[in-house]
Image (cartoon, rainbow, N blue to C red; front, side, top):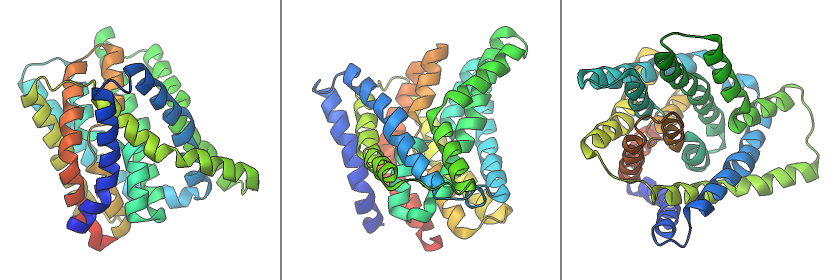
Length: 310
């Protein structure tokens, strides 16, 4: 446990450095927004493309893996939704809270950290988790919020969902990388070196950006934030472990990566969606802040627990 904690500590130290820079005003909200944009559209996209270009679709797409992860996410999603309805909140707010319960910071934190901690072969399962989160659950929250406002499903909602998936640079990068791999297209050495240099900026840039963005988050509604953090940091990896290790025949190493990915704190893109639709952004903000702080310990515990499977 101590060894794993010490290995994860530098990643969270970078988040802490970004947080301190944001809190002191050395890194302004505008600077944070531009750094996030650079990481999202350039550095992380280059990293994901290189990972995917060196993998085959068969190495990423395992239907038992997909089934286990979706089953576990579905269970936690329904629990969070049920508790939300018992508290008497709307469908829109319930959808946002359920999103907090199952969507971890896989892109900015999981991809760089888990590949380093669990080895390069972890890239395939991590990309699969990221793709499911982006395609399935980002689409689901859009459908639920827009559909509940309109009172019905419409072609416009589906167009919005489809456009969101197509325009997401992480999905585009993974898809293009798999296309290059599937067609066995060679990547020229200068291009490969360019992608390597640009992709290397993803890890420190993403972690620093996470911390700097947390500096602007509030810790209001702590009871709800605590519940959502519990869902994300405890219930989600527990449900994934049950699905991957007991119910479905998932290969042990893939199960370890999936469980580790499920242990990550609430993703920043949930806040972006909540803010975009004007649904409980402060609640999401608090959940991100609390879950990220607690994850310094919980992620290490989960990775130490699954380490024998690696």
